Amino acid sequence: MIGEMEPPSCPIVRFYTWNRATISYGLNQNPLKRLRIEKCLRDGIEIVARPTGGREILHGWDLCCSVIRPIDERRSGVDFKDLFGRTNEVFRQGLNRLGITSEHHSVSRKCGFRNGPCFRQIDRGEISVSGRKIIASAQRIYDRTVLQQSSISIEKPDYDIMDYLQIGKETELKGETVNSVAYLEEYVRETFSMSGIVEVFRYAFEMEMGKAGKLNLPGIF
Image 1: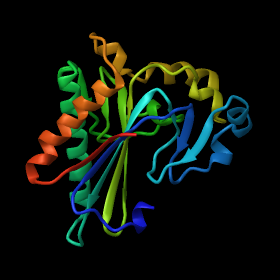
Image 2 (image 1 turned 45 degrees about the vertical axis):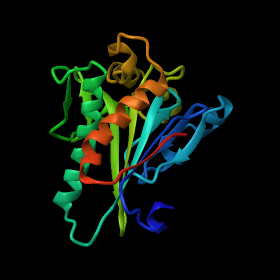
Image 3 (image 1 turned 180 degrees about the vertical axis):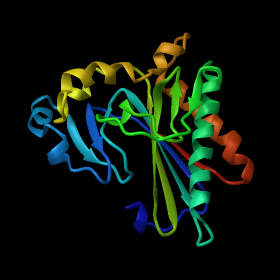
Image 4 (image 1 turned 90 degrees about the vertical axis):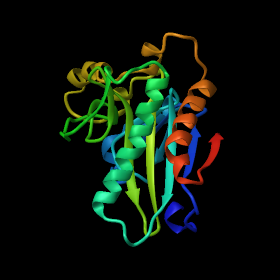
């Protein structure tokens, strides 16, 4: 567990994908109340808990990134907010390098509540393209480390996550949820591979975080 590990001497950035359809739920969620577990199992969709907060995310068509930073007792709430913003700024630089200019993507300045899964709502500090969420992020603070997990929406999934949630007004929310997500494949015109996308974001992290000294980039799993 991250909270129990010896804090790293430098920030660690890990990129990873999923080899099967999986729904992750946030730290403070109750999957028994939120998910149609029997339907997930019947359709072969895995269910896992995230150490960070937030709501449900359907994985398998996204690129995930975990950033682990060592911290000390001098950190304040403002510092952690700044770390969250700095990481998302790196993602914005990556989007720029992929050809999605700052004219199209933005960082949300406010937080509201909308029922449904994670990608239906753009929370404060998260990144959207033309008003649709493309990168979801959540942070968790431990005694000596801080973890930020992000999901970058790459392509439209084969499943609709709304079919696996037990929430009200599903018919109305279903269409809204589909229209609230931006996919990288919609905006990157040139043919691209997952490894190519990873290299773009790796470079962005190296340019931003590498300036301050050491940076551990294990790569993609």
